[in-house]
Image (cartoon, rainbow, N blue to C red; front, side, top):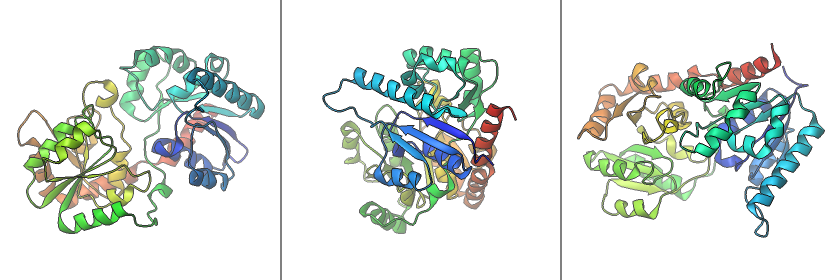
Length: 364
């Protein structure tokens, strides 16, 4: 469909740690575009996989050399990116994040480009204000959630509503033909004995993890809470006091899905301290729903599908017993919640969303 279309996609973060970026790159590959992918950090295996599919990968490295200052690295990144943009003369220059836009710089305002904003940056005032001119200048803005599209249009007085590209991982991401590890074997042993209530993500005070861990006291003996992800020492201390919580260290995507698929119920938990969290767009919604795992979440405005589609329930930290009641509500009709969760996953077509973005950009 787009065999002759040249795209330069610019991303400033470690590729393997960004499932939404992995997804859009894989979908662009599927559409057979001529893709140049600029990133700052990528594993050897991911680079090999992309290059085997005829992607030109240009790695700017995620960490500057020790003898190189961050400012020097910043401007070196900018200089090299503009060499690529000017040399490739692509049909589409696609900026994959707010970070990338700021690094590429004001010269972007003189060309057509797609700006993909994965975050709202509402509490990062420097980012928030500096990105305004880029969002207003972009030929097309892309965000992962309808509510964020409306907020962004309001914040930046955009002429048109940004397009939505959900954080749904690419299908290949879910192929679980990976070798077993100590963590997966451990998780399988747990799942054989108890129903896993799974939280995956950063585990720290900023994310309310200390409160979530304490809620494990409400669980009956048939359940165990598994927290999977990087953990701060301050939170780790709590684990010694609460026997119904098990911690599994962070596992690189997509290998962590070997644990996800074992969950009986998945947890999504964010604070209400910023709009970016209240109107969250977690890719873990799709990671849970791919396996028909019902979801419980703390009261978040941006996850109405949990209740409206009956794929999950919500709980309130302020109400004693609310957490276990949300689990009991799912258990009372588990098969329906599980089916609805999987149906939601299948209802979002990531490839069509990318095609629509390209066609809108090209004026088709």
